[in-house]
Image (cartoon, rainbow, N blue to C red; front, side):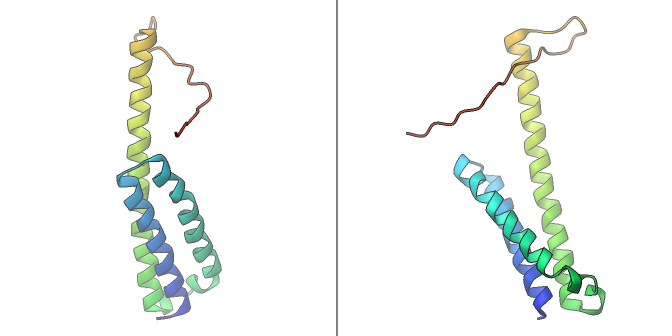
Length: 118
């Protein structure tokens, strides 16, 4: 396996770990996602010149396709989480402030966030 293929496979493993963490999110799990994504990006950046010629390196091409599929999966998970939270914010607005004259849920000032662990 070429060096580029190995780095791409390593990046994919990091993205797959992020997806696994996103399936059971907790503050600790989400804190692990950023370093993993940073490692994946670093792996990808270090082999970009080689990836440009991945079509002539079948293992690298296959690894690049696998990484692309893993990134798409992680994106779907993140999009689903964003949609879930957006709907809860709308529901919270309706429950706490009612509806506007146009029939839209009211907005909630979410202010600053604070997480306490004891």
